[in-house]
Length: 149
Length: 85
Image 1 (spheres, rainbow over the protein chains, first blue to last red):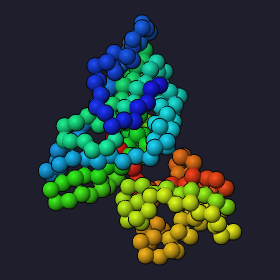
Image 2 (image 1 turned 180 degrees about the vertical axis):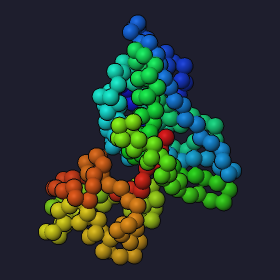
Image 3 (image 1 turned 45 degrees about the vertical axis):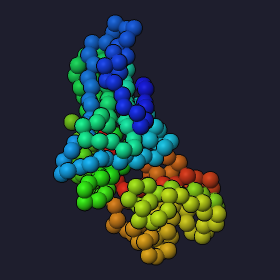
Image 4 (image 1 turned 30 degrees about the vertical axis):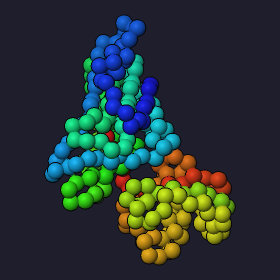
């Protein structure tokens, strides 16, 4: 697994290529790319995190995914700092032998990241700044993995 | 018992405190829940830690519950529900 928490932007092309580079056992790579939406006149999104715990939490989430599906490679990148609408914010890439495991693990990692990794978003708008509230739908999305679905 | 406490995001702003070192906790404060109650009893803005407020916590960088014990040298963190991704 490979985890990066960084202020810099990233290029998904090389990231996707690296998930199967130098090997012939990968049958599928599933990826998720999250972008900053410009809803409601958003000027910028500020991403705060808990250095140290963030990396540990992401590693733990990946270990849990590896216990559920036969994964060959996992890459997670999450940006921090001030991001503008349209900018890349998060990338999850998962390589496996077959597509079902890759799709499921990619979704699982995102659902858990959204509810367990210590990141917080603050919106900068023309009317001022406000912290983004956690969404119950995110908790529900993460909880369905515990229900044996 | 000496511990370090970190506060993040909205909670950090409301409390006006990012981090503090506590050198001496009262004898009864041996769980995360008890620590939260004790901090809340400071009054004023610390009511942000009151029961019912949506606050998450970690002990030594792992998510933890109120009944989680705390020990000498621990790094404790309090923060709002996370909103990354």
